[in-house]
Length: 67
Image 1 (spheres, one colour):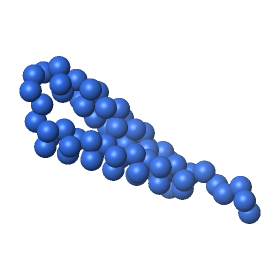
Image 2 (cartoon, one colour; image 1 turned 30 degrees about the vertical axis):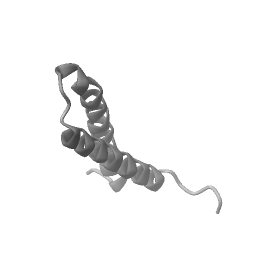
Image 3 (spheres, one colour; image 1 turned 60 degrees about the vertical axis):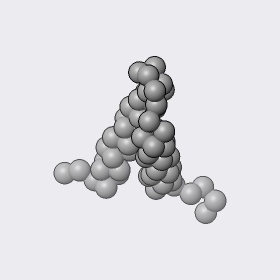
């Protein structure tokens, strides 16, 4: 049976993978010709949202040391 921690780790892995994929797409998009600025903006916004979600999950997995 998977624990909550296992589920969080799996989700974190998925988000990191999608973040890397988006980074690759964003980097290569200008190489394909004229860039659709709206598409580029949406991709960057999605990437930023993924980064925020990754940070949130990482904070759930790392216990507070201040206690």
